[in-house]
Amino acid sequence: MKFRLKRLTYLSFLLLCLSGNFFIAKGKSIQKTKLYTMPARKMKVEIWSDVMCPFCYIGKRKFETALAQMPDSAAIEVTWKSFQLQPDLVTDTTKNTITHLAESKGWTMDYTRQAIGHVMQMAEGVGLHYNFDKAVVANSFDAHRLSHYATAMGKGNEMEEELFKAYFVDGKNTADHVTLTALAVRIGLDEQAVKAVLQSDKYAAEVRQDIYEASQVGVTGVPFFVFNNKYAVSGAQDSKVFLEVLQKAYAQWKSANPTSVMEVKEGAVCTPKGECK
Image (cartoon, rainbow, N blue to C red; front, side, top):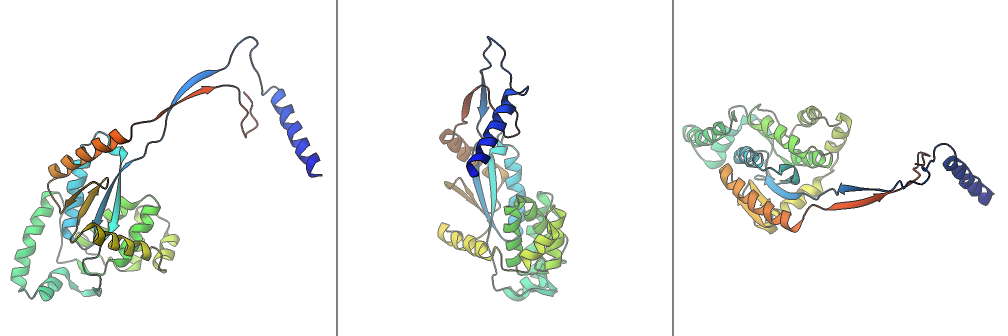
């Protein structure tokens, strides 16, 4: 019975091909040649950062300025890696980051405001308006888990932007699951899927792996940028520095990964749709 079924299927396919769907002009060759550019790999840039790091958001802007000047920016893949400046930090919505910084450092409020004034000026220089008076003291572990999920969904960079903005500009609690879900939905992620991730321990291992890798690479502070596993930039440096390293790393990567073109000689074929031509 199995043999008859296979035979009938084969005969039906032959009849289909020999019907009006299959035609070769008499005396003419249908063979032709086309060139196809093979999908190229991308040069990787890995960025270790923490949501609560003010220099990380500034560094992101400076890096983006440099990346925008790269003609082949589409061939560069940016991957965000997790890092925690204060892994044992307990989320406290009753305090803003200025009060927390003053208490943890033993500074006066006046000195603390003076100290963060320089950071605010740096942020203004790249178009960011920090509101430290509103920023909530929040542990960043779940935010990092969400970032990993967003990366898996192809939205890693968008998620990082939302997290930084929520923390430094909008004064939102980035440890709160309701807040994190709203941020994720804003960039197009599925609400129920996000809730499921946050209510579980998914991507916790990936966050810890990033932190472990940081210790192996020698990361002692963030932001920390690694280009093609060959060059690194530490800190929110000038966009010119990022551009110089990008150009150098990409030139070497491109030389080792030339564009591949496949020559295809096309002839008569039958497709799974039942078309023979």
